[in-house]
Image (cartoon, rainbow, N blue to C red; front, side, top):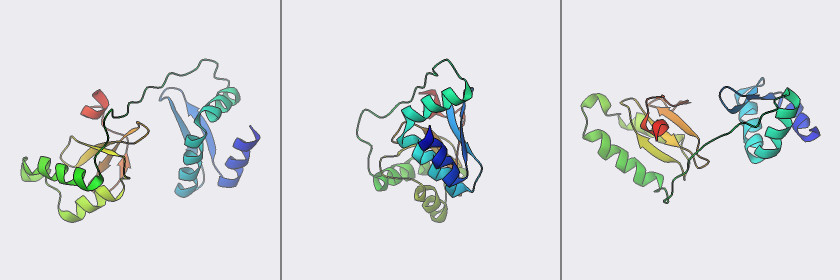
Length: 152
């Protein structure tokens, strides 16, 4: 508990479990501090969940389900080419320009799996199984509930 509280003080954030979403949220501080806190929490997930559950008085253990790919995810350069092939088969509305494509792929890391689904964004299954959406401005958000990546 001390290590968690120390990290929260140093970063100026507070971690809390959001039972309805089955997530850990970090609030306060600037965006970089929140990102560092969540990265730390991800590295210590089991202990953090247990400590937060105790601190918040959440008795029941939440069940979390995430999926990762069974096969090796292709390199980002290959996925970019595959994404280009996918959207070129669609109308012009689906086709980002090169600058937008650069922004979209700039937020990805090797090991992320691109899942083409919508005209102005695609879904991404992160290495840890978390699914997010990336739009043409490179913004990372929660995925649409209509995304095939969420329904899989």
